[in-house]
Image 1 (tube, rainbow, N blue to C red):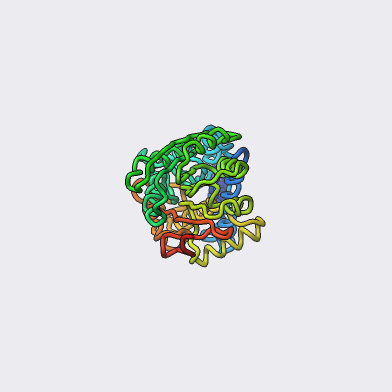
Image 2 (cartoon, rainbow, N blue to C red; image 1 turned 60 degrees about the vertical axis):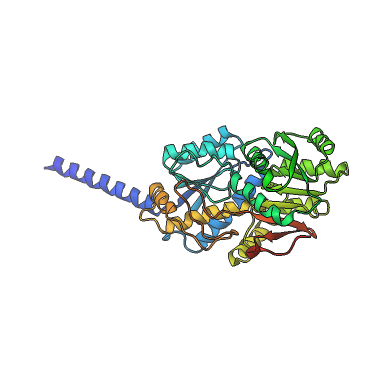
Length: 390
């Protein structure tokens, strides 16, 4: 009898322990993984994405979290490489994150997308524009931002509003990953729709330390329009080279340019870049939530928010919107809720955020920006316009 009592007591203790562990897990933080380059040539952009995610996390936690549970951002450095991103995704899966976010480059996002599918953890892309990213039939990947194809189509559409009689020839200079190559090649393949003639296609590696020879080639081509596509660091090299050599192009029109639409770029090159165009990410200037984000970022980090970082903030808010609708707070519950997203309130210059069967945001959109008097001014679409072309 004594032995039976001891066995029953042990069973009660074990059940109580497991019950307590479950309760603690249910009431613990909801972890969201963040994979971005925090070292290397893209650390500026990667850190800004993480910064904006932290603002979103703090905002939701200050409002009481998700049913009383706080959010926790678990950040790992992708090192700006596919290997580093894959390793970070594995580590975060082992840390029990409910979602993954990232990664700023398309190559890294491809490997995280595969890892998400394998681990069955939803992956919400912050920034990565490759048009092939969501073509694998995966069920766990979602992208809010415009793809290479959408940016390129926006160029063709918006160019009709820019074009003047002295715009006849164009040259492309672009970083040679899926991102840069994809945009340059798509526009070139549809160049007849713009009435332009392409006189040169000049690729380069984003890890380059100089674009001197490439700029020399551009001078020889003498295009009416220069279309540069690249990240902040390499595009800054391009503008630096052009400026130091006092080279003038009639028009410079970036497409998803990592520098031209960035606040830091204005601080460094505002006078030089007067009149530059860019078709890029942007926030909705008419949204009160946008104004709150801009103000908070400036107050917390002492600078204006880099434009790509808008998608870091929005990635968290999309996850939060889905978590609030989850029947079960779990990766699978979150995935199901994400597929049902219809989010009219957000900070982007577009209609509702809605994902199609591939995970693509069907209303994603870029805007046409011109640098005027040292400021970024939205020109198109009209519902978000802050000025007209100069």
